[in-house]
Every structure is written in C-alpha cells, then in structure tokens.
Length: 422
Image (cartoon, rainbow, N blue to C red):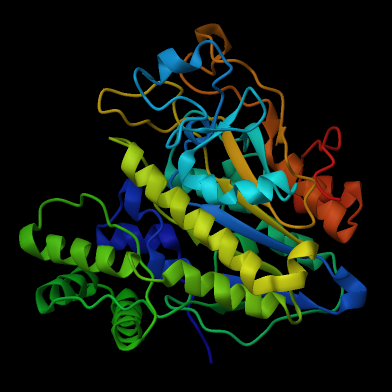
C-alpha cells in the first residue's frame, strides 16, 4: 500500500500546533524495526529509545558529590541520598532519581548504566525540532542533518541481507533515526483518544485547509478511536481555544495513563525474540520548564516500566540485548524561578540490558562551578553522545571504526573505547 511521507515539522507548522510539548505528538512517533539473518548481525539486539523533550540528566543521575550541586538545585530539607524516598546512592558521587528505583536490581547485576556530560554537536539555539533532527541524523551540523537519512538506518545500510517485517504505523511516518535506504517496517499501537465531538471538530478544522494533512488526520483519528490499545502524552498548554483544547488535553491525558508504552515494549520484545535485531521508538514528557518534580517523576516511571517490560518480554534474549535511551539536549544546571529547568546542553544517556557492561556512570565529570558550566548556564559536555552510540554498535555488531566514523556518524572521532558491551 502506498503511503505519503509527512514531515513532522511541516505537519505541526501547518496545523498551528508548534510548541515544546507538541514537538513529538504520539500519533507521529511509531516504533520501527529491522531484521536480518543471524549470520549477518549475529544474535545481539539493540533497542534505541528517543526521550523527546530534553531530559534533565542532572536530576536523573544526580551528582550529589559535587559541592555546587545542592546550591544550583535549591536542595534544602529534601529527602537526603539514601533516605526511604530520596535519591539512591550509586557510587558515592552520583545518585539515582527515586522514580528509577525499580531499576536498581539491574544496576546491582551490572545491567544498568549511564553516560553523563554527553551531548550531540548541537549548541546554543536549543530548539526541540533542531535538536531532535541532529540527534537522529547523527551528523555534525544541522546543515548536514536536513533531509537526510538517520544514523541507525545508515548502520543497517552497511549490513547485507537486511529485510523488513510487516507492520503498521498510525500517522504513516517513520522516525528520522531509521529513515533511509535500508528497508525497515513501522508499527504503532492504536491510540484510543475518545475525543469529544468538539475536540474532534477542532482537529478537523485545523487541518481543513490542506487536503493531504486533512486526510492523514482523519485516518489517524479513525484508527485511534477505533482501537483497544492506547498511547498518548499530555499536550501541554496550547491556549486560546478554551474548552475544546481542554477536552483534547484531557483525552490525551486519559490515554496516556493507559498501557500504551507497555504495549510498545511487549510488541518490541515479541519481535526481538524472533528475527528482529533492532527496534526504535520514542517516549514523550521530558520538557520540564516548570515545577518539574512531578512530570519528570512520571516520565522516569514510564521509562522504568518500559525497560522492565522489555526485560520480562525478552526472557533469555535480554542477555543479548542493549537498550539505549538518549535525548536531544540536557537542561540548565540551575533551577529557574518556577522550579523547572530550561533547555540546556550537556545531559545524560541511560543504558540497560544483559549485554551491557553496566553498574557504572561513564564519562568525565566537568564540575558545576559557574566557570565550569557551558556559557555559565549548562552542564559542559565532555563526550559526544554519538561516540558512545558508535562503540555500542561496534561491540554488538562488529562494525569497523572507519565505517562508524565516516558513514554512520560522518565526522565523528570515536575517541577511547568506554567498554560498554560485554
């Protein structure tokens, strides 16, 4: 069946829905798979999760051993590290956000790890769209990212006998990460939004001026409201449309509370137990400009449950699997006036899986003194996130360094091997 490619930025621009929390509408974030003969990729699996919105790595993996941390994060009277509801000590310097506490058995088993003070080459403008494009394209600059394939697809292009599985995608759009010449398949769970008549009418009106997007939206709504599964995330403050916008937000919130990401993890595990070797999808909810304690905790809980569902669903295959969760940029070192954090630079990546050499926080810590911050506001990156990704792919699939540095991540210097894979 023929499909029309929809550009995420163009869609949101035409529909008038551009905004931080809508940079990654769940209707347009399908899960993508690729499979190959065992003789080509071997028996290892890779799952890449894009954390859309800019995860605050300083809050997720807290550098409580840094003397400047408490002052920047206004920590007074909070639960101390090691308290029942407080951050969980990892190594005497870093502590884990308590919302990820269910993952601690993986940490103790060496199947959970983190890369800190990492970022893409993206700097200064701090746009969700540009940051995500550069992260998924894997290039040095935005000029090289525009309109090209994704780094995970370029990896697959270097492997013969790649084949796609039959799958389905609401929104008809694959994520940039796996877009390219290598054949892949898309699938997305039904999103049971249960929109009110007013909210549905508002959506249709916003698309009415463009037949392409009107048709695509009508199909998405028809599929979404007719399914049994659900997946969505909060739509944020779009303002200006009163009760109808509130209806939409409430509908999306209701759907988000259901089992969408669990269904994604279940489906991914099912495929990875068979011929699939690579899976990629996104989790929304990481944009925390104001009062971030609650939304960050919710997003981390979703990520934790997703990883644990992957582990449970994969069974013995978990021992051959690496899960990598990355985000477009970090957030400011200081809390802002609303106890949130704004778009920043350096951040963290989350790693899990039985093939991982975990139980470590990898990376050179730059410090949080004002003089050590990037532009005196952000965590200073000390490692290109692409380098860690490249070493993971080399460890799992044996790709040559030259291919990874010149083709998969053009212009990358992989540097020293952090030995992330067993």
